[in-house]
Length: 73
Image (tube, rainbow, N blue to C red; front, side, top):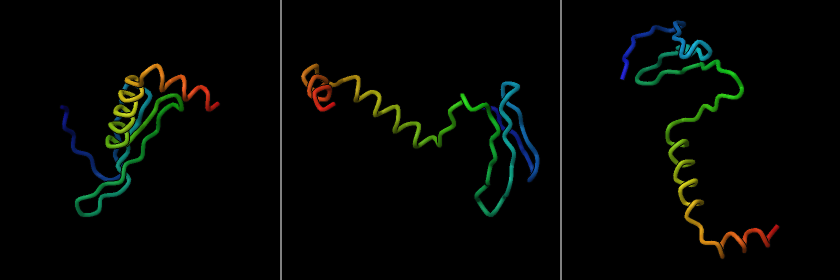
C-alpha cells in the first residue's frame, strides 16, 4: 500500500484521469472529492463488498429459481 500525506486542498492523481482532493479535515474524519470519468464506478468499500456478495449469491441460484424469476416478468 502506498501511503501519502496530503493537506487540505492538495490532490493526487491516479491513472492520469482520476483526481482525489482533500476537501476538509475535521478531527479523525476527512472529506475527499473525487473527479473521474463517468464510466469509472466509485463505491465506498462497504457498499462494494455488499455488491460483490450479492453477485456471488446470484450466481448460485438454482435453475428453478431463475425460471421462477423469469416467470415474474
